[in-house]
Image (cartoon, rainbow, N blue to C red):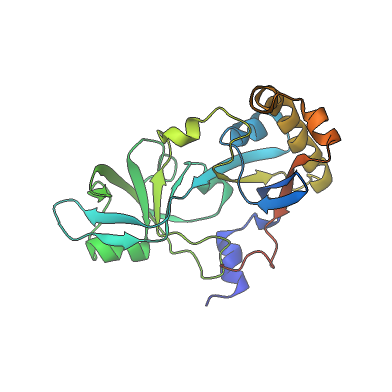
Length: 241
């Protein structure tokens, strides 16, 4: 277990990083979960001045991974698709590869130091290829430091989400990604929340009309609601779950 100082080195801007969670009440049942629409990250960065950058994660659970030219798969549990903005929001040092371009191209991936050693030993894996689920080839473009045990999330393999079809979803009522964003140090949490929820109301209205045949106002008048809850990365929320 690493200490809080180690955590802070990886999350130097942690006090200004927020995770977006959805708070839904429908037909008397309330559900809260840390998922949001794929469109939200771009809207946050382009329409809320206090937001510096945003990143989306899409995780599908355990996947098979092997080095190209080998036949033995390893079941990777800590693997995720993620935007290249990951390294702009979180302070995760890139040890090999170009920090400015990693994960900007489709079918590329970044390994942690431990994962790189697991597949390539002491050799530099950058430029090598790996096979995901026996059918997709990804090129290794970077190696980053291992995340500390008390990091807010834990992954060993980061797959580029550039061409992930699910992240092209245009429905504001479809919640399939985890969204984090980095805000300016002087940003007010309550104001950020108001602006994020205003974005939802602005863009989700057509979806609500199309899917439910009602307006958001009518939906809320019936005792229902859909809201965004912005969760700061506090010390308490840093622990691995």
